[in-house]
Structures are given as structure tokens and as C-alpha cells.
Image (cartoon, rainbow, N blue to C red; front, top):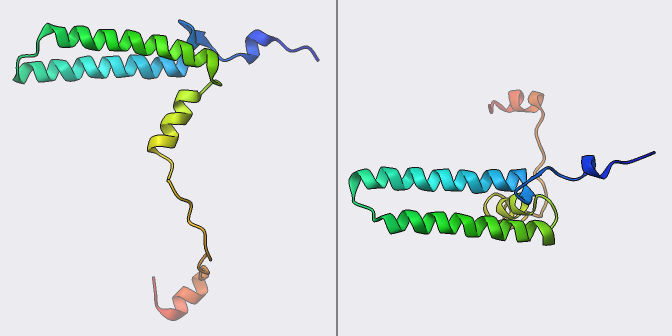
Length: 109
């Protein structure tokens, strides 16, 4: 059976995966909105906005490098590992689960 490499490769824009680009763009939009809200309360110098923009451009360049050296979905997997997944897996004896009939007889809900 013939396989098409263009179909099997993940979709890329600007040299990085679309999911990674979405995270970078979301981070940029969120940081600009946060700075805008903070600017309503206190004065924020324009250099801070320039620093955020340069940080985002640097992040895009790093993501392009990581796309070439790491497998697809690396950023999503890394974020999940760092912030979502538990650090330890509980190993031990699983307590027996009572059936509904036994719970009704014992009076527990």
C-alpha cells in the first residue's frame, strides 16, 4: 500500500507544529492582555512591551529548533508531565469495593 509522507507528517506553520504555535500565540495574547490590564492600574513602561515581544520571538525560534530535534507533541507532553501528571503512582492493595446490596444491608450510603 502506498503511503503519502505529506499526510503522515503533522501540520506545521512557521516551521513548528500547529499545537505548539497555538500555545505560543496564546501565551503572547495572554501576556499582552495582562500587561494592558496592569497598565490601567499602574504605569508600565514601553520597554516591558518590547521585552515581551522579543521574548515571544525568541520562544518561536526555540520552538522551531525543538521541532527539528524532538518528536511531535513534545511541548504538550512536557507541559503535561510538569503540571498535570502526578509525581508518584500509588502502589498497594486496592480496598475491596462493596456491592450495592451489601451497602444497603449495612445502612451506609
